[in-house]
Image (cartoon, rainbow, N blue to C red):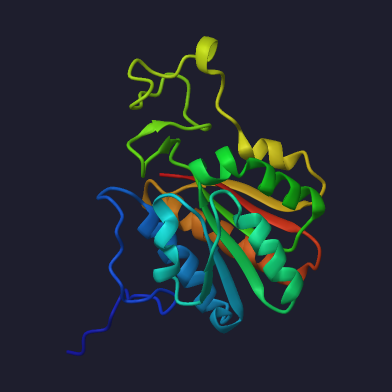
Amino acid sequence: MTMKPVFEKTCGLTDKPTHYCPGCTHGVIHRLVGEVLAEMDILEDTIGVASVGCSVLSYEYFNCDMTQAAHGRAPAVATGVKRVLPDRFVFTYQGDGDLASIGISEVIHAAARGENITVIFVNNAIYGMTGGQMAPTTLIGQKTATTPYGRESSTQGFPIKVCEMVATLDGAAYIERVSSHDVPHIIKAKKAIRKAFDTSMHQQKRCRFVGSINH
C-alpha cells in the first residue's frame, strides 16, 4: 500500500526553525502567507518587509526577497519599494507594538494614499518581545506586566481599533479581521490573506489591510 502525504511544508517558507515562543501562532500565520504566495506562484515576484518586534526575524523564514524596516516604518519602506519596483508584489508583516504604536501614522497615511501594498497585522494585544507590557491594542481588563490588575479605561484609555480606523479611509481596498486560534478560523484567515493578495494583484492604487490576526 502506497502512503500518500496529507500535509507537506510549503515552499513559501525556508527550512530555518522559528524563534517564536510555544503557543504563539506567528508560525501558523507565516505558513498561511507562505502557502498563499506559493499557490499564487508569485514567490519570485514578491518583496516582503519585516517589522521590529517578535516578527523581526521574519526575513529568515519567508522564502521570498525580504527587507528590514526601522521600528514602525514598514509601510513607508513598502511604499518606496513598490514605487521603485511597481511590477513586484509587496507586503509588510507587523505586530501590534510595531504597527499600532510607533508605526500607526505610517499605516494610516499609506492607506489614505491608497498605496498598492498589503499589510499583515498580527495583533496579540501585548508587547511580547520586551516582557509583556500593555500595548495600544490591549483589551480593557487584560492583565499585562504593566497592568497587573487589568487595563483600566479611566487611566489607560481604550484599545485602538485599527481595522475600524483604517476602514474610514477611502484608499483602503480590503480590510478583514480574522483569528488563528483554531482550525476553522485558520482556514478563514488563509482565505482572507488570499483575498487581500488577489486584490493587490488586480488593483494598481489601493492599500490592502488584513486586520488584526489575533493569537
